[in-house]
Length: 160
Image 1 (cartoon, helix red, strand yellow):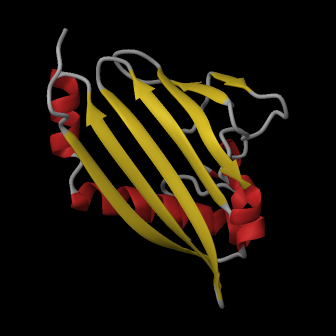
Image 2 (image 1 turned 90 degrees about the horizontal axis):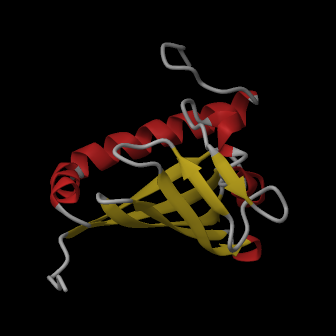
């Protein structure tokens, strides 16, 4: 048995989104993300409703093995979603998103916690810096706001 103190990193970022939570929350779904997030290509989605819900399972392309996502909490009334992502032999990740209304739309508090599962995970955790995470979240924020404004996907190379 291999029992060790976890090597992990947690990052949180608050996105400023240009629509009310009731409009944004349905887009935080493995099926609906494909409408606004370039390169988001789920391989399998298992869901009673066809959308995000507790118990929904998604697989996405990853290396060395496809990632498995499992929705653990889905609370539309509170605009909260949480999922676990397992990247076999790399990391176990918890993702949570909490929306709250603002005068200009809403804020999304997005938190990722990555826990290493081995050597590849240690490298991933080391590279998951605050600067990397901020750039990742700002790109996601830009793409979602573009979709909220235009109803179309922002494609890399497009100008806003």
